[in-house]
Amino acid sequence: MALIQNKKFHLNFEAQETFEAGIELFGFEVKSVRNKLGSLDGAYVIVRGGEAYLVNTYIPPYQPANSPDDYDPYRTRRLLLKKKEIAELAGAEQQKRLTIVPKSMYNSRGKIKVEIAIAQGKKKYDKREDIKKRDMKRDVERDLRDL
Image (cartoon, rainbow, N blue to C red; front, top):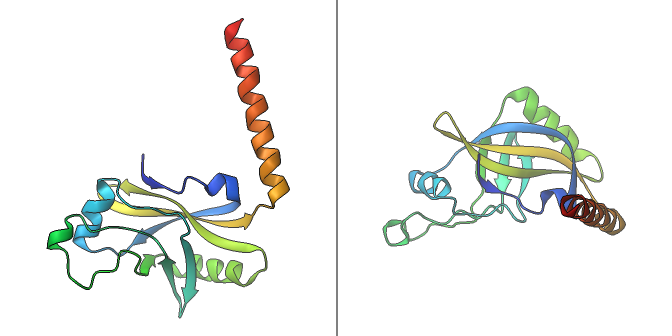
């Protein structure tokens, strides 16, 4: 069960390969994520110096009054991956038209995990085609249900 999802992932991207990564969070951020607060919209992954980082993810403090004064909810957070996985992500980052995007955050055996995907951005006409297919499928299901 996902705690936080990137709702527009399937509309904007076509996933090629997915990974499960741990994430380095403060204690009050963990509580915030477990309460399903936060957003993955506009977030992406970069690889620098042999480490992967999640950039532009919004995680508000659990109790704003008790959080540090200099806390930034959009701070860059380190992802915990194996060296082979980081090397694969670095290779994908160098290729044109590929990006690394988080799909969701979820709880796995008491730990917060991030599902990330190497994805290719969809063009506008691909998005329109997907919306058309979805609407047609919905209409067919509605017609079958009414029979």
